[in-house]
Length: 379
Image 1: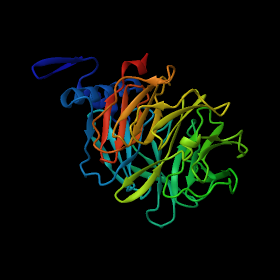
Image 2: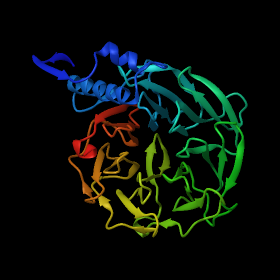
Image 3: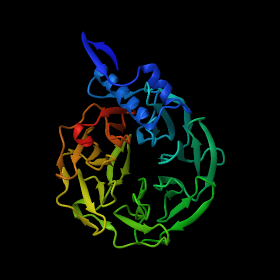
Image 4: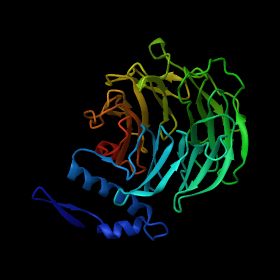
């Protein structure tokens, strides 16, 4: 255990000394996953007690664009952030320092391996054509690149880490690539899905937790289609919102240009999907029945941009244009506690650590803020 004093108050935290925590988080050290997770939570707690209910991570090189994507490595030793300008950065859990340099990918799509310390990004650097580039975050070097058609809008790892799904702009199909061999595997979905192209928005792709389904938006962004991972064919009807939620996306002003954002998250057991949109609501769906569960979750004052389930499935986090982050009790279908405030502009990305203890949020204010998740998420 170790202690420190803030405002004449002695604070004691369980666990190793700070030097031991840093050693456990180093690549190739003997520190196991539990120690890595503990180092993250203790680092966040120390900073929160020093600075308030949450705090921003500040890069050594100032961010110049909104933080549109966030994710923790599977062992919680790193947090990755991607900005709207395509700059990817890593942050160490122990000490919360920036790790390595930055990747200037020129794309906004990023995904983290669920089994290894590998980062996938959509990139146009070098050739001008789009590729999915896989980076080894231990040595901060690219290990392979897979060319793909169109501009990469969204990436998702399969649960076993052996496949990455790629959604490009303009079409309705999903391309599967191998992070192990660097080859394109196959393409899912029809050439056309009956929708019209979505203007100015990012397309969606996500794997169900069992890896059997790949969810993606149609071309108009008004529905979510479920594709069979093996056959590539649509399975059952799409999720289609009511008239109030028919756009299934969020619009907000970035500069003078309206951009549309959309988000989908699967619950860890794969039974529930969460969506959010410009009507200020979050909606939960029964994946098997393709039906909305109860009434929409209301509490945001403006459009909602991002949703994420805690790994144990008890909480759902949402971030909106009202600059706030709301937490929802999934079982009770209601808001869990007060809104999290601290961002000065719309919140556009949210992510939980794998141990449910830490919530990261990214914003148009160009910061990443870290929060300790409430105890309800860890029962």
